[in-house]
Length: 142
Image 1 (cartoon, rainbow, N blue to C red):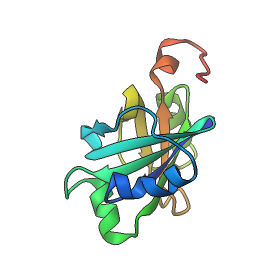
Image 2: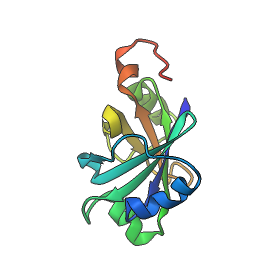
Image 3: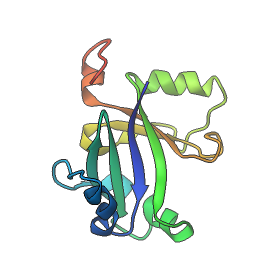
């Protein structure tokens, strides 16, 4: 399991991008909408992982609710898994609780599921399976 990305909540992608641009990073590709999660996402590659800036598309989205309660900043950490269903079963066996019973669509064709922050010692943790890992048996991604 490797760090896949860090999700940063921001009310505005341009404002949220300023520190990363100042650090010398450039956005990777175009901004993407993940309709199922109600967010617009801008990605900055940092080594093998990425920083995802997450801005709400609508007031009832999870990111909008997060920003109502918290300052902009760290929203979640995400870890790449090869088989999200097997990992969910393994973690349930260790008492893990999830925010949904089944994984759903994520950025760039990924399949994602979130662990409850109470289980994550106060941090929202995401498991993320990339499409190539779903197609290649025993694949390790990059």
